[in-house]
Amino acid sequence: MTAIMGPSPYIYVCTRLRVRKAKLIPREEYLRMLNMSLPEITRVIQELEYKREIDELSHAFSGINLIEVALSWNLAKNYQNVITIAPGGLKEMTESYLRRWDIQNVLTILRGISQGMARGKIKEVLVPAGELDRTFLDRLLAEDSMDRIVEALKGWRLYPVLKKLYTRAAESGSFAELENELYKKFYAEIISDAKTVKGGKSLLEYILLEIDIRNIQNLIRIRQQKAGGDVRGFMIPGSTLTEEEFQRLSLITEGEEFVRELRQKIRNKALLTMLDDLRKEEGSTSLHAHEIALTRLQLKTVELMAKLHPFSIWSILAYLDLKKFEIFNLRAITRGKEANLPVERIKGYLVM
Amino acid sequence: MAVEGLTAIAAALAVGITGIGAALAEYGIGSAAVGATAENKDVFGLVLLLTVIPETIVIFGLVVALLMLF
Image 1 (cartoon, rainbow over the protein chains, first blue to last red):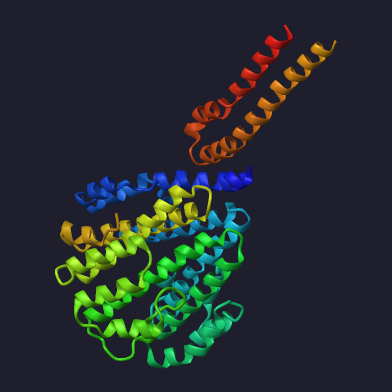
Image 2 (tube, chains in turn cyan, yellow):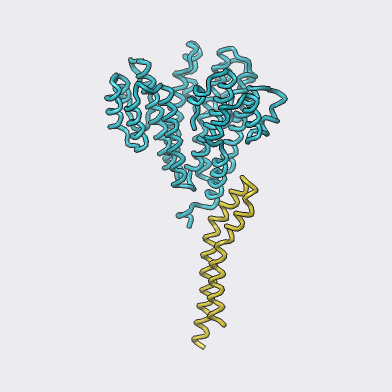
């Protein structure tokens, strides 16, 4: 029986997350919000799942900052809750998947401090959804120098990479290389985790798709900016493309040829369809539109797989990613409205 | 004697096997029902109804068993 349906904790958790996914803001609601004023949007957000966080934080923040911090807190709380309720292998996979937030938080702290930002301001934008919890991040923020922060991270699984590249990053003031290497290590670790954990095949499939998407996004960016030179360092290894292929593709100037070459390497059907669209639209559509289209493709794939395999890691991944983009969308709408951007422009930033 | 004994065994099997069938069906539905209720308490009535629907299988078995015995 368990072979057919999965053990009951899997069914329980996956159903919970499917219900949560169903409660996420639908496309029509975003379209409605786009035509509202900022106070109206704030009220709508308050009426949604974010009421508790807004109430909790209203004494310390106000206006758009309150919304922003409440959204981050809600995201972190939800992700931590998923880790708490997920059983066995699902828990391990969820933890591995959410470790990317540690990289984001550590880099936010380092970047913030190197730019001389106030500790309180940095704290506002942290999302403690990974292994490094809120208390630990607060401890990091309380350290008086970047060197001490790096020292305090000694037990972190990505510390060796951080230690190796931190000095160079701190001297140059650019954390881009450190960021690239941390993410590469993260992807290498999650691939190795997915290969060992029970039921990890689905996670591996998704991570490989994600790596392909990131690499294609990077290639599009490099080509549009005509960066040239050695760009192998921008590639995330582990999936379809090799470093040499990535380098070669980045140097192809002709759009048609670029898509044709890429098509020969990619095996994922959804990505192939996407590449056909890219071929038709190259030059006519902005870089940002391509990136949004790729992200949408990723979400569509995870949603489809969650429907096909309802009691597997797919349901969890679908919720985690859709929730993340709900937060991104709400942020884009509120920030866009605050900056008085035209509706069409804000709409271009939404992943619906 | 032999016929009566076999009838009793058949009746027992009718109730027993349908009971196992209902249990297997309720196993999945019950887990999902608890999960759905944990997220949205409003669905409690509906999922309770869905959880007990497989009980009908046992009722069929019971009816068949009673018909055999009486």
